Image (tube, rainbow, N blue to C red; front, side):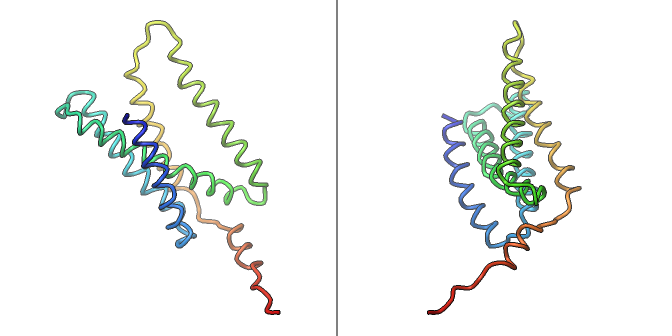
Length: 162
């Protein structure tokens, strides 16, 4: 149920974040940074519950999982869009295809490890937290260069009056 709610809120959040990003188009990286930072907080919260440092309550588990899923899923379209901006003039289809392939390979490796006999699942929480934490330095080092957006803004034509 938690994943269902996280998926629903993530999908709705993606629409809201997309609208905000349309309004503030040159701040896409900052939106992703905020989403990932709050997601890190919720993943740490979940890990502390899992390690029984914090009191184990069903409401806290639901809140931390749904919040982290929602935030991370809301940021995925922004990551794809930012990648297209950074890779310009490479075609969007090529950029998105490579990103999807890398994502699928990482997912295959992540889930494929579970096929090892007698392996626990506690490492999965740490991998998730670490992978989201690794995005922060990469995003902070990234320069805001929106050449595709600037080109689109310059070439937009106003409709002719007939």
